[in-house]
Amino acid sequence: MSFEIVEEIRLVRNRLVDLSQHDRRTLLRKIVEALDTIQDHSAASSLISDPIGIDRVIISTSQSISQIARLPDREFEIVVEEFNTLFEKLAQTVLDEAPPISGEFH
Image (cartoon, rainbow, N blue to C red; front, side):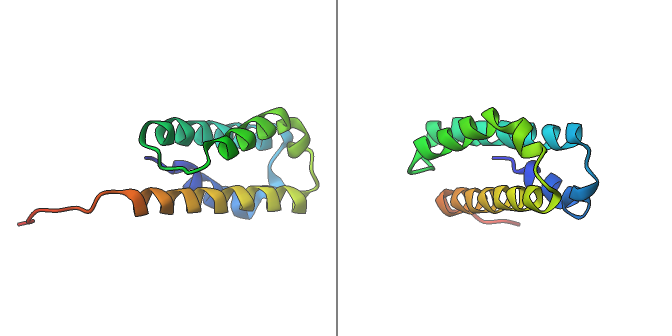
């Protein structure tokens, strides 16, 4: 599973306050798309124990993109950091659930 969104969040973290409303909405849409992708993968492999929780996050974020994008800078930064934390935890879940690598390497 790919977590490019974590890297993208890290790249924009220092300039979140400089993002335009359009850039903020674009970032939030990418976050929703990444969550949707994770949800699809987890449904196929049962990696997430509470898929309804991810559904709720996707729906509420999708419905609130414009409002979130208009938050004051510090509040927007907190929201983005929380998404980053969520993605890092999801990435760790994927790593924890991955089968061990076996075989000899030469």
